[in-house]
Amino acid sequence: MIAQNITPDAHDGTWTRRGIPAGHRADTFTAAELAAMFGQEFVIWESAGQSQGGYELFVRSRNVPQADGSLAGYDADGRLVIIHPATRALRILTK
Image (cartoon, rainbow, N blue to C red):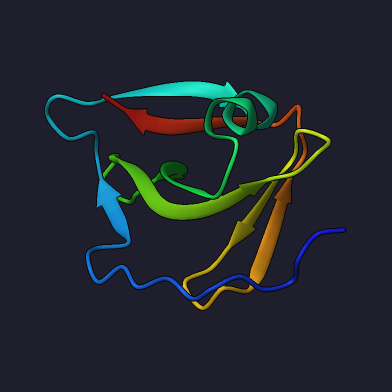
């Protein structure tokens, strides 16, 4: 069973980043790999495609790993907004 709500996010910084910041890189992992790496609720900067200026756009996303390797994604208010299947590839910012 996937929870429909989690605690609202207290983050008061930016929710988006344009381009890859210096000292970072972008890597691709499956949802199952991320679920195994983190094992509990976590926040990542996930690629949301290209902006009009041609820069890659990253959005801050909160995820909770599920028993089947999928990820339940929640918005800042704590509402469930997406389920990433275990096999889905996600491009994220890493160091």
